[in-house]
Image (cartoon, rainbow, N blue to C red):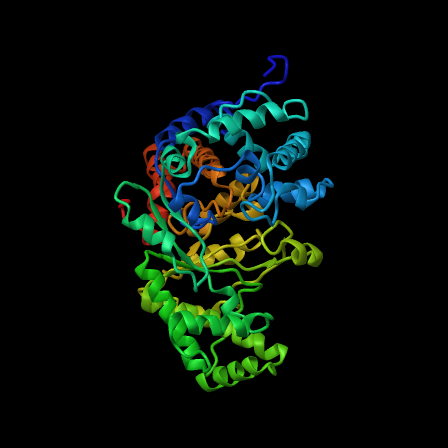
Amino acid sequence: MSTTTPPLELHPDRLLPADPSRREISRRLYESVRELPIISPHGHVPPSWISEDTPFRDPTSLLISPDHYITRMLHAHGVPLSDLGVGREPGDGFDDAAARSAFGALCTHWSAYRGTPVRYWLEEELAGIFGVTVRPSAETADAIYDQISAKLSEPDFRPRALMDAFGIEVLATTDDPCDTLDEHATLAADTTFASRVVPTFRPDKYLDPALPTWSADVDRLGEVSGIDTGTYAGYIAALENRRRYFVSRGAVSADHGVIDAVTVILETAEASRIFDAARAGTATEDETTALRRHMLTEMARMSCADGLVMTIHPGVRRNHHTPTWEEYGPDVGCDIPIAVEYTDALRPLLNAYGTHPNFTLVLFTIDETVYSRELAPLAGFYPSVYVGVPWWFIDAPEAIRRFRSTVTETAGFSRTSGFIDDTRAFCSIPARHDMSRRLDAGYLSELVVEHRLPEDEALEAIHDLVVANPRTVFKLGGESR
């Protein structure tokens, strides 16, 4: 690569406070946790990548196609999603020329990511993992692509080797209740594999009777569980069965991506009546909404029984652009946040289960206005409730700083989840966790210089945020297997 092109450099004090007195403290705090293991209790990396340990095909399919943070911005700048490999399956014709062109589009639009966390993560990936030393641009795209491609052909850059290099102790995937979880069984049985990969029970499409595929999905649930789902009682029993199966395969949590956080508790007879109507296709919109909200509360009841941590992340209008969803499917970057309410919405659920000794509920949001008004007060009272850290659209430096200042005053540090990377972009995991550690070091340094917290306690706090909190909240235990 030409030495005349602008360099790509990672400053050792990136994201740390500019004030000299705080920076020194931040450095000490950050260095104390920099090499601690990564615990990732919520994410979307395909488990087959790890179980099969197949070399990554090319830089685009690894770094660009699965990362909707990247693809949505390129789409906004006029790059078709089809040119970025979105919606493609391995081996369906995304050849080297197409992959190279997509990578060139990213490099050509490098300036579009200025000031974004995506730019920060990408720089960490390119420089920190692949040794890239020049700034991406239209002129440097091919050389960078070739450098990464050469690395991907080496044994040290296969998925399992990268898991080890990243220091990932626990990695949670997101899985359909009808999945066999064979990949997880393979990994659990492999004594040469040191990390822990756990499934996550994600039942959204089985709980919403308004979805056009719901009845067929409920049929499939019956087939896999071996329980007749023609009745409401059988439907409930089948869900309980699959949850137990997930627990037997190492799952620690059940994840719920719902449009709102409203919960209701229906009488069994009423729930059964609506279920029958929904199966017959005659349920009204109000009835399907009521059953969906009731089923969220049923998931809480089941968590009290089987111990799966319940995570809820409402407030996103999924597939906002219908033509994109119809062409490419879900999870390609066209989901848009909406406002959401928690206090009254969750009251039925929390009245029933909020003080149950076996219940843990982690509440996420993309609506920052609810952190200090609703989520922190809820976590500051209910022993079951924890505040999920910023994620998705607010997984960014300024939002994380705001989160700490608004939540800590009411809920402290111990009532938060630990960092959640929530990503399909495998190579961005260490960059995201490192970003969080730097930002937490900066926030804690402010408390130290203002004489609100001794530095020895700040050291304890940042260690808790990195490892103790996620292990406790997600019931992971103190050690990897």
